[in-house]
Image: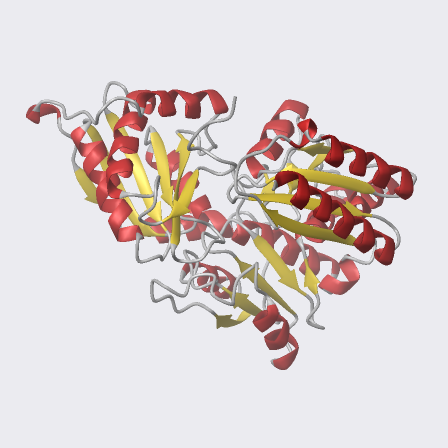
Length: 444
Protein backbone atom coordinates (compact mmCIF):
# COMPACT_ATOMS: atom_id res chain seq x y z
CA UNK A 1 0.00 0.00 0.00
CA UNK A 2 1.43 3.38 -0.97
CA UNK A 3 1.99 6.21 1.42
CA UNK A 4 -0.40 9.16 1.44
CA UNK A 5 2.12 11.98 1.72
CA UNK A 6 5.63 10.68 1.02
CA UNK A 7 6.44 10.29 -2.66
CA UNK A 8 9.55 9.32 -4.60
CA UNK A 9 11.59 12.05 -2.91
CA UNK A 10 9.96 13.30 0.28
CA UNK A 11 6.74 15.32 0.46
CA UNK A 12 6.01 17.86 -2.23
CA UNK A 13 3.18 20.06 -3.49
CA UNK A 14 1.90 23.52 -4.30
CA UNK A 15 2.42 26.00 -1.47
CA UNK A 16 -0.85 26.70 0.32
CA UNK A 17 -2.49 23.48 -0.87
CA UNK A 18 -2.44 20.30 1.18
CA UNK A 19 0.02 19.04 2.25
CA UNK A 20 2.26 22.09 1.83
CA UNK A 21 0.66 24.26 4.51
CA UNK A 22 1.92 25.77 7.77
CA UNK A 23 -0.40 23.58 9.82
CA UNK A 24 0.82 20.40 8.12
CA UNK A 25 4.49 21.37 8.51
CA UNK A 26 4.04 21.77 12.27
CA UNK A 27 2.30 18.38 12.48
CA UNK A 28 4.98 16.79 10.32
CA UNK A 29 7.76 18.13 12.54
CA UNK A 30 6.02 16.75 15.60
CA UNK A 31 5.45 13.36 13.97
CA UNK A 32 9.05 13.16 12.72
CA UNK A 33 10.36 14.06 16.17
CA UNK A 34 8.40 11.18 17.74
CA UNK A 35 9.87 8.68 15.28
CA UNK A 36 13.41 9.99 14.71
CA UNK A 37 14.21 11.57 18.12
CA UNK A 38 11.72 10.12 20.62
CA UNK A 39 13.85 11.09 23.62
CA UNK A 40 14.80 14.52 22.36
CA UNK A 41 17.83 15.26 20.25
CA UNK A 42 18.70 17.56 17.37
CA UNK A 43 17.76 18.20 13.75
CA UNK A 44 19.57 20.11 11.02
CA UNK A 45 17.39 22.15 8.63
CA UNK A 46 18.47 23.53 5.25
CA UNK A 47 16.49 25.02 2.37
CA UNK A 48 16.73 26.23 -1.20
CA UNK A 49 16.03 29.78 -2.36
CA UNK A 50 12.22 29.72 -2.71
CA UNK A 51 10.49 32.55 -0.89
CA UNK A 52 8.24 29.98 0.79
CA UNK A 53 11.32 28.48 2.43
CA UNK A 54 11.02 31.11 5.17
CA UNK A 55 7.49 29.91 5.89
CA UNK A 56 8.31 26.22 6.19
CA UNK A 57 11.59 26.80 8.00
CA UNK A 58 9.70 28.71 10.73
CA UNK A 59 6.87 26.16 10.90
CA UNK A 60 9.21 23.17 11.15
CA UNK A 61 11.34 24.95 13.72
CA UNK A 62 8.26 25.59 15.87
CA UNK A 63 7.11 21.97 15.62
CA UNK A 64 10.51 20.54 16.48
CA UNK A 65 11.20 22.93 19.37
CA UNK A 66 7.74 22.20 20.80
CA UNK A 67 8.52 18.48 20.61
CA UNK A 68 11.75 18.96 22.55
CA UNK A 69 14.18 18.75 19.63
CA UNK A 70 17.05 21.22 19.21
CA UNK A 71 17.12 22.86 15.77
CA UNK A 72 20.22 23.85 13.83
CA UNK A 73 19.56 26.10 10.84
CA UNK A 74 22.03 26.31 7.94
CA UNK A 75 20.01 28.40 5.47
CA UNK A 76 20.21 28.03 1.67
CA UNK A 77 22.54 25.14 0.79
CA UNK A 78 22.21 22.14 -1.54
CA UNK A 79 20.39 19.01 -0.43
CA UNK A 80 23.66 17.00 -0.31
CA UNK A 81 25.07 19.67 2.02
CA UNK A 82 22.24 18.92 4.44
CA UNK A 83 23.06 15.21 4.25
CA UNK A 84 26.75 15.92 4.84
CA UNK A 85 26.23 18.43 7.65
CA UNK A 86 23.70 16.19 9.42
CA UNK A 87 26.37 13.53 9.65
CA UNK A 88 29.17 15.97 10.48
CA UNK A 89 27.32 17.74 13.30
CA UNK A 90 26.03 14.53 14.86
CA UNK A 91 22.37 15.48 14.52
CA UNK A 92 19.77 12.75 14.85
CA UNK A 93 18.32 13.62 11.44
CA UNK A 94 18.25 16.31 8.79
CA UNK A 95 15.55 18.14 6.83
CA UNK A 96 15.77 19.84 3.44
CA UNK A 97 13.06 22.28 2.40
CA UNK A 98 12.93 22.11 -1.39
CA UNK A 99 10.83 21.03 -4.37
CA UNK A 100 13.99 20.24 -6.34
CA UNK A 101 13.46 21.02 -10.05
CA UNK A 102 9.83 22.20 -9.63
CA UNK A 103 8.79 25.86 -10.08
CA UNK A 104 8.89 28.29 -7.16
CA UNK A 105 5.14 27.94 -6.48
CA UNK A 106 5.87 24.42 -5.19
CA UNK A 107 7.87 23.35 -2.19
CA UNK A 108 8.73 20.12 -0.43
CA UNK A 109 10.26 18.53 2.65
CA UNK A 110 12.91 15.78 2.52
CA UNK A 111 14.42 13.87 5.44
CA UNK A 112 17.84 12.33 6.05
CA UNK A 113 18.85 9.93 8.79
CA UNK A 114 21.81 10.53 11.10
CA UNK A 115 24.17 8.96 8.53
CA UNK A 116 23.08 11.31 5.74
CA UNK A 117 20.96 8.69 3.97
CA UNK A 118 17.32 8.77 2.82
CA UNK A 119 14.71 7.33 5.17
CA UNK A 120 13.42 3.81 4.61
CA UNK A 121 9.84 3.16 3.51
CA UNK A 122 9.12 1.75 6.97
CA UNK A 123 10.36 4.91 8.69
CA UNK A 124 8.31 7.13 6.39
CA UNK A 125 5.27 4.96 7.14
CA UNK A 126 5.87 5.36 10.87
CA UNK A 127 5.99 9.16 10.48
CA UNK A 128 2.76 9.13 8.48
CA UNK A 129 1.09 7.06 11.23
CA UNK A 130 2.05 9.70 13.80
CA UNK A 131 0.46 12.42 11.65
CA UNK A 132 -2.91 11.23 12.89
CA UNK A 133 -2.09 12.66 16.33
CA UNK A 134 -2.07 16.39 17.15
CA UNK A 135 1.31 18.15 17.54
CA UNK A 136 2.89 17.68 20.93
CA UNK A 137 4.29 20.40 23.19
CA UNK A 138 6.57 19.12 25.93
CA UNK A 139 7.02 20.69 29.36
CA UNK A 140 8.76 24.06 29.25
CA UNK A 141 11.98 22.74 30.78
CA UNK A 142 12.23 20.17 27.94
CA UNK A 143 11.62 22.50 25.00
CA UNK A 144 14.24 22.52 22.28
CA UNK A 145 16.38 25.47 21.20
CA UNK A 146 17.14 26.86 17.76
CA UNK A 147 20.58 28.06 16.64
CA UNK A 148 22.02 29.07 13.29
CA UNK A 149 25.25 27.51 11.97
CA UNK A 150 27.06 30.10 9.89
CA UNK A 151 30.10 28.09 8.75
CA UNK A 152 28.20 25.27 7.03
CA UNK A 153 29.03 26.48 3.52
CA UNK A 154 32.78 26.40 4.12
CA UNK A 155 32.61 22.88 5.61
CA UNK A 156 30.58 21.68 2.63
CA UNK A 157 33.00 23.31 0.17
CA UNK A 158 35.87 21.46 1.82
CA UNK A 159 33.90 18.22 1.53
CA UNK A 160 33.38 18.77 -2.20
CA UNK A 161 37.03 19.67 -2.79
CA UNK A 162 38.11 16.50 -0.98
CA UNK A 163 36.20 14.38 -3.52
CA UNK A 164 38.86 14.81 -6.23
CA UNK A 165 42.35 13.27 -6.22
CA UNK A 166 44.76 15.13 -3.99
CA UNK A 167 46.66 17.80 -5.87
CA UNK A 168 44.29 17.84 -8.86
CA UNK A 169 43.74 21.32 -10.28
CA UNK A 170 41.40 22.73 -12.91
CA UNK A 171 43.68 25.59 -14.00
CA UNK A 172 43.25 26.31 -17.68
CA UNK A 173 39.68 24.98 -17.83
CA UNK A 174 36.93 27.48 -18.58
CA UNK A 175 33.58 26.42 -17.15
CA UNK A 176 30.08 27.87 -17.31
CA UNK A 177 28.19 27.09 -14.10
CA UNK A 178 24.37 27.29 -14.08
CA UNK A 179 23.15 27.39 -10.49
CA UNK A 180 19.41 27.29 -11.40
CA UNK A 181 18.99 30.34 -9.15
CA UNK A 182 18.79 27.72 -6.45
CA UNK A 183 20.48 26.34 -3.37
CA UNK A 184 23.94 26.00 -4.97
CA UNK A 185 24.04 29.54 -6.38
CA UNK A 186 26.87 30.61 -4.09
CA UNK A 187 28.77 27.44 -3.24
CA UNK A 188 29.04 25.89 -6.73
CA UNK A 189 30.99 28.70 -8.47
CA UNK A 190 33.30 28.94 -5.46
CA UNK A 191 34.16 25.22 -5.45
CA UNK A 192 35.25 25.23 -9.10
CA UNK A 193 37.06 28.55 -8.72
CA UNK A 194 38.95 27.22 -5.69
CA UNK A 195 40.37 24.48 -7.93
CA UNK A 196 41.63 27.06 -10.41
CA UNK A 197 38.92 26.94 -13.09
CA UNK A 198 37.90 30.10 -14.93
CA UNK A 199 34.22 30.18 -13.94
CA UNK A 200 31.45 31.98 -15.79
CA UNK A 201 28.39 31.85 -13.49
CA UNK A 202 24.87 32.08 -14.92
CA UNK A 203 21.52 31.84 -13.11
CA UNK A 204 23.25 32.41 -9.79
CA UNK A 205 21.15 35.41 -8.71
CA UNK A 206 18.11 34.06 -6.86
CA UNK A 207 15.25 36.38 -5.90
CA UNK A 208 12.97 33.77 -4.28
CA UNK A 209 10.84 33.36 -7.39
CA UNK A 210 13.24 32.60 -10.27
CA UNK A 211 14.46 29.19 -9.14
CA UNK A 212 14.46 26.72 -12.10
CA UNK A 213 12.88 29.44 -14.25
CA UNK A 214 14.30 28.85 -17.73
CA UNK A 215 17.56 27.62 -16.23
CA UNK A 216 19.17 24.69 -14.44
CA UNK A 217 19.35 21.03 -15.34
CA UNK A 218 15.78 20.88 -16.67
CA UNK A 219 16.17 23.97 -18.92
CA UNK A 220 19.74 23.96 -20.28
CA UNK A 221 19.16 26.07 -23.41
CA UNK A 222 20.89 29.16 -21.98
CA UNK A 223 23.85 27.01 -20.90
CA UNK A 224 24.02 25.47 -24.39
CA UNK A 225 24.26 28.94 -25.92
CA UNK A 226 26.69 30.33 -23.36
CA UNK A 227 29.32 27.56 -23.42
CA UNK A 228 30.30 27.92 -27.11
CA UNK A 229 29.57 31.65 -26.92
CA UNK A 230 32.31 32.26 -24.35
CA UNK A 231 34.49 29.44 -25.74
CA UNK A 232 34.29 27.42 -22.55
CA UNK A 233 35.60 23.87 -22.27
CA UNK A 234 32.36 22.66 -20.71
CA UNK A 235 29.28 23.78 -18.84
CA UNK A 236 27.35 22.29 -15.97
CA UNK A 237 23.83 22.85 -14.73
CA UNK A 238 22.44 21.92 -11.34
CA UNK A 239 18.80 21.84 -10.30
CA UNK A 240 17.10 23.93 -7.63
CA UNK A 241 18.43 21.92 -4.69
CA UNK A 242 21.78 20.98 -6.20
CA UNK A 243 21.53 17.20 -6.28
CA UNK A 244 21.08 16.83 -10.06
CA UNK A 245 23.65 17.49 -12.75
CA UNK A 246 23.68 17.69 -16.51
CA UNK A 247 26.68 18.94 -18.48
CA UNK A 248 27.26 20.57 -21.87
CA UNK A 249 30.31 19.91 -24.03
CA UNK A 250 32.32 22.63 -25.79
CA UNK A 251 29.96 22.46 -28.78
CA UNK A 252 26.89 23.11 -26.65
CA UNK A 253 25.59 19.52 -26.71
CA UNK A 254 23.83 18.25 -23.59
CA UNK A 255 25.30 15.26 -21.76
CA UNK A 256 22.65 13.73 -19.51
CA UNK A 257 22.98 11.61 -16.40
CA UNK A 258 23.43 8.36 -18.35
CA UNK A 259 26.36 9.75 -20.33
CA UNK A 260 28.00 11.26 -17.24
CA UNK A 261 27.52 7.98 -15.39
CA UNK A 262 29.34 6.25 -18.24
CA UNK A 263 32.29 8.67 -17.99
CA UNK A 264 32.64 8.16 -14.24
CA UNK A 265 32.12 4.40 -14.30
CA UNK A 266 34.54 3.67 -17.14
CA UNK A 267 37.22 5.82 -15.48
CA UNK A 268 36.79 4.04 -12.13
CA UNK A 269 36.90 0.70 -13.97
CA UNK A 270 40.07 1.63 -15.86
CA UNK A 271 41.71 2.61 -12.56
CA UNK A 272 40.65 -0.63 -10.89
CA UNK A 273 38.56 1.35 -8.40
CA UNK A 274 35.07 0.21 -9.42
CA UNK A 275 33.40 -2.22 -7.05
CA UNK A 276 30.14 -4.05 -7.64
CA UNK A 277 27.70 -3.29 -10.44
CA UNK A 278 26.72 0.09 -11.83
CA UNK A 279 23.05 0.74 -11.04
CA UNK A 280 20.61 2.72 -13.18
CA UNK A 281 16.82 2.72 -13.32
CA UNK A 282 14.14 1.33 -15.59
CA UNK A 283 14.38 4.65 -17.49
CA UNK A 284 18.15 4.47 -18.06
CA UNK A 285 19.08 4.48 -21.75
CA UNK A 286 19.79 1.05 -23.20
CA UNK A 287 22.93 2.53 -24.74
CA UNK A 288 24.53 2.83 -21.30
CA UNK A 289 23.84 -0.80 -20.49
CA UNK A 290 25.39 -1.90 -23.78
CA UNK A 291 28.42 0.42 -23.43
CA UNK A 292 29.17 -0.85 -19.93
CA UNK A 293 28.66 -4.43 -21.10
CA UNK A 294 31.37 -3.99 -23.73
CA UNK A 295 33.73 -3.01 -20.90
CA UNK A 296 32.72 -6.00 -18.81
CA UNK A 297 30.97 -3.85 -16.23
CA UNK A 298 27.77 -5.39 -14.81
CA UNK A 299 24.68 -3.17 -14.89
CA UNK A 300 21.45 -3.41 -12.89
CA UNK A 301 18.18 -1.47 -13.01
CA UNK A 302 16.27 -0.19 -9.98
CA UNK A 303 12.90 1.52 -9.73
CA UNK A 304 12.92 5.23 -10.55
CA UNK A 305 14.20 7.40 -7.71
CA UNK A 306 17.70 7.84 -6.38
CA UNK A 307 16.70 6.20 -3.10
CA UNK A 308 15.96 2.96 -4.98
CA UNK A 309 19.28 3.23 -6.81
CA UNK A 310 20.97 3.69 -3.44
CA UNK A 311 19.22 0.66 -1.95
CA UNK A 312 20.30 -1.60 -4.82
CA UNK A 313 23.88 -0.28 -4.71
CA UNK A 314 24.10 -1.08 -1.02
CA UNK A 315 22.48 -4.48 -1.52
CA UNK A 316 24.92 -5.47 -4.29
CA UNK A 317 28.04 -3.75 -2.97
CA UNK A 318 28.22 -1.12 -5.71
CA UNK A 319 29.41 2.48 -5.47
CA UNK A 320 28.35 4.15 -8.74
CA UNK A 321 24.78 4.63 -9.94
CA UNK A 322 22.30 7.20 -11.08
CA UNK A 323 19.40 8.38 -13.20
CA UNK A 324 19.07 9.91 -16.64
CA UNK A 325 17.84 13.11 -14.99
CA UNK A 326 21.27 13.65 -13.44
CA UNK A 327 20.91 12.19 -9.96
CA UNK A 328 24.33 10.52 -9.77
CA UNK A 329 25.52 8.57 -6.76
CA UNK A 330 29.22 8.21 -6.04
CA UNK A 331 29.10 6.39 -2.73
CA UNK A 332 32.89 6.38 -2.58
CA UNK A 333 32.66 10.18 -2.32
CA UNK A 334 29.26 11.07 -0.83
CA UNK A 335 26.29 9.49 0.96
CA UNK A 336 23.73 10.89 -1.47
CA UNK A 337 23.38 12.35 -4.97
CA UNK A 338 25.47 15.51 -5.24
CA UNK A 339 25.58 17.62 -8.41
CA UNK A 340 28.81 19.42 -7.49
CA UNK A 341 30.64 16.25 -6.45
CA UNK A 342 29.45 14.47 -9.61
CA UNK A 343 30.67 17.33 -11.79
CA UNK A 344 34.04 17.21 -10.07
CA UNK A 345 34.36 13.49 -10.86
CA UNK A 346 33.77 14.17 -14.57
CA UNK A 347 36.13 17.16 -14.60
CA UNK A 348 38.80 15.07 -12.86
CA UNK A 349 38.57 12.49 -15.67
CA UNK A 350 38.85 15.28 -18.26
CA UNK A 351 41.96 16.64 -16.53
CA UNK A 352 43.61 13.27 -15.93
CA UNK A 353 43.05 11.99 -19.49
CA UNK A 354 43.46 15.29 -21.32
CA UNK A 355 40.25 14.50 -23.22
CA UNK A 356 37.26 16.74 -23.79
CA UNK A 357 33.81 15.84 -22.50
CA UNK A 358 32.79 15.10 -26.09
CA UNK A 359 35.66 12.62 -26.48
CA UNK A 360 34.93 10.91 -23.17
CA UNK A 361 31.35 10.11 -24.17
CA UNK A 362 32.10 8.64 -27.62
CA UNK A 363 32.11 5.10 -26.22
CA UNK A 364 28.38 5.29 -25.51
CA UNK A 365 25.72 5.55 -28.21
CA UNK A 366 22.34 6.68 -26.94
CA UNK A 367 19.32 4.86 -28.29
CA UNK A 368 16.45 7.09 -29.46
CA UNK A 369 14.10 7.44 -26.50
CA UNK A 370 10.70 9.14 -26.48
CA UNK A 371 9.02 10.13 -23.21
CA UNK A 372 5.41 11.35 -23.20
CA UNK A 373 3.74 12.52 -19.99
CA UNK A 374 0.02 11.73 -19.80
CA UNK A 375 -1.90 13.78 -17.24
CA UNK A 376 -4.33 11.79 -15.08
CA UNK A 377 -7.08 12.91 -12.71
CA UNK A 378 -6.68 10.02 -10.28
CA UNK A 379 -4.23 7.30 -9.35
CA UNK A 380 -4.63 4.22 -11.51
CA UNK A 381 -3.09 0.75 -11.68
CA UNK A 382 -2.12 0.30 -15.32
CA UNK A 383 -1.98 -3.48 -14.90
CA UNK A 384 -5.76 -3.53 -14.34
CA UNK A 385 -6.51 -1.82 -17.67
CA UNK A 386 -6.78 -4.50 -20.42
CA UNK A 387 -6.42 -1.98 -23.26
CA UNK A 388 -3.12 -0.74 -21.85
CA UNK A 389 -1.77 -4.24 -21.18
CA UNK A 390 -2.64 -5.31 -24.73
CA UNK A 391 -1.07 -2.18 -26.27
CA UNK A 392 2.18 -2.72 -24.36
CA UNK A 393 2.36 -6.35 -25.46
CA UNK A 394 1.80 -5.29 -29.08
CA UNK A 395 4.55 -2.65 -28.82
CA UNK A 396 7.04 -5.16 -27.42
CA UNK A 397 6.33 -7.54 -30.29
CA UNK A 398 6.90 -4.71 -32.77
CA UNK A 399 10.23 -3.78 -31.16
CA UNK A 400 11.30 -7.44 -31.40
CA UNK A 401 13.89 -7.28 -28.64
CA UNK A 402 15.63 -4.17 -29.98
CA UNK A 403 14.03 -1.74 -27.53
CA UNK A 404 12.04 -1.28 -24.36
CA UNK A 405 8.65 0.00 -23.18
CA UNK A 406 8.22 1.49 -19.69
CA UNK A 407 4.96 2.88 -18.29
CA UNK A 408 5.09 4.26 -14.79
CA UNK A 409 3.30 6.78 -12.59
CA UNK A 410 5.25 9.88 -11.56
CA UNK A 411 6.17 9.94 -7.89
CA UNK A 412 5.71 13.69 -7.61
CA UNK A 413 3.08 14.74 -10.19
CA UNK A 414 -0.34 13.45 -11.44
CA UNK A 415 1.21 11.88 -14.53
CA UNK A 416 1.77 8.56 -16.25
CA UNK A 417 5.15 8.55 -17.97
CA UNK A 418 5.16 6.62 -21.23
CA UNK A 419 8.69 5.78 -22.39
CA UNK A 420 9.62 3.88 -25.53
CA UNK A 421 13.19 3.20 -26.62
CA UNK A 422 14.62 1.50 -29.67
CA UNK A 423 17.01 1.62 -32.61
CA UNK A 424 14.78 3.59 -35.00
CA UNK A 425 13.49 6.99 -33.89
CA UNK A 426 10.47 7.04 -36.19
CA UNK A 427 9.30 3.67 -34.93
CA UNK A 428 9.87 4.69 -31.32
CA UNK A 429 7.96 7.96 -31.78
CA UNK A 430 5.00 6.22 -33.43
CA UNK A 431 4.76 3.53 -30.74
CA UNK A 432 5.07 6.07 -27.91
CA UNK A 433 2.30 8.26 -29.31
CA UNK A 434 0.04 5.25 -29.80
CA UNK A 435 0.63 4.04 -26.22
CA UNK A 436 0.06 7.55 -24.81
CA UNK A 437 -3.29 7.71 -26.60
CA UNK A 438 -4.30 4.33 -25.18
CA UNK A 439 -3.30 5.37 -21.63
CA UNK A 440 -5.13 8.70 -22.01
CA UNK A 441 -8.33 6.97 -23.12
CA UNK A 442 -8.14 4.20 -20.52
CA UNK A 443 -7.50 6.65 -17.69
CA UNK A 444 -10.34 8.99 -18.64
